[in-house]
Image 1 (cartoon, rainbow, N blue to C red):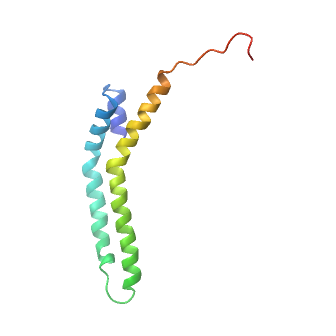
Image 2: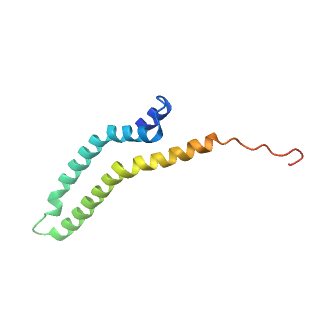
Length: 104
């Protein structure tokens, strides 16, 4: 989400637009890398012969984990950026209250 942060700070885009731009920029590399890894694990999932059960169970858990992490990277991370950036900007916009005189 570095692209989104730069677009927000440098270009002054609204938080949601910056997050969408950052997600669009990172979508293709995330999908290409994830699919390459997932397709590389398919032979483990479809394994036959000696030790096939161990390979298939390992391959299935890696495959589902990669599918889940791909969904997280594509959907949840930009949403999380919007939420955290909104909190940070609201926190920075609040001015600290001065302590009353005589208080220590």
